[in-house]
Image (cartoon, rainbow, N blue to C red; front, side, top):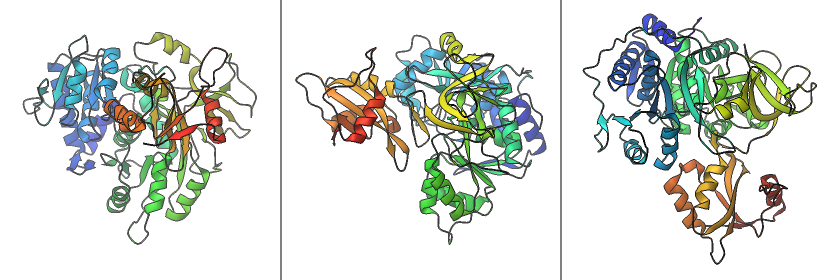
Length: 513
């Protein structure tokens, strides 16, 4: 398919495959035609509440067809879909609302209360449209009177389509803006690379749909390829294996942790994975040994993929046919180009390490209302990823380190400064640093290294409870350490790399709840 907008993709699928199943979840099946109609009704509701072209619309929902319909409703009216993790608490939600100035947000029964709490302290008015049971402070979402038809709105390739919230060492939430061009280019390149066939694929989406990969690669990818999507609200290994068996799934993507879970629970007498043509592992460092064992045990080829929200999904992947170098992130996909550059932005020789720069039409439009960070990361030459790697003589990319301190735990990004800021606000904490430490299952887990305030003592159980009240569960430190003195560099910055070395040397004191 040659597509320049997501609305074109959906119109094509809804016209050619109107009565074919599109989304399958615990509530049943939704056809392409029904999904198109639902997104049309939602689009008209958004228009009625004042959403205009170029406005960001919050989608604060769990992984479900309704979130995806809200995403495409935004496309139909030229608004910008802004999925928000349903695990976020009010404290985490508030800066996102302030950064984007979004005035309309879609929620459900599970997220409504946190949304109302977050909006109380936001300077501008936010209309919270709620499906499900009524909650004080929200507006009930009534779709029945709304038309399924939307006035035609031509979209340009450079128009923003979605923004996903990401962060870095600053901890401040940034909205990475994806355009119609960057998304459709990614969908085309991945379809060609994977060899997808129109109206023949069955995708399994066990990734959060409020996540870039779940929304852009899985759901949008299914629309682009006329595929069915089996959507799970959350990861459950047995449900995943059973869904592949029952629905004859042909393709899935996930964090490496997910494939480790599948490997541990796979039972050839119960599970039939013979329909699977391909699996993709992304979002965290991948163990070559685990991948080899997964393929040997299940018979399913699994490819490593490297990309980011800022480039709308994947930039490189192991080839499906040809040489697959274990430990490598593969070769550039389609339009993508990879360069390894030094601190001045100059390319380094083949085989030498430097920062990974990604260019091509997959690169998005920068960060929402953040010119300083956009200028620092985006240029005519592409996007600076913050990852350190090298390209070998055959053009394969190898990632050797992350320039940023982001912790990737089971595919979820954890930004240490966010957790540190919260811990600093606790009366018992004097100095703290949050680092990633190795974990056999999740790849990494967050660990807190603390120095108590004078005349105070640290109670890990109380700190855990404090974190759970204010953070999504996956961000809460899993291990807790104390140290007499933090290692500092010349500028006074805590040297987290040294803390990791000290951990390995046993120089940190672990405290347990």
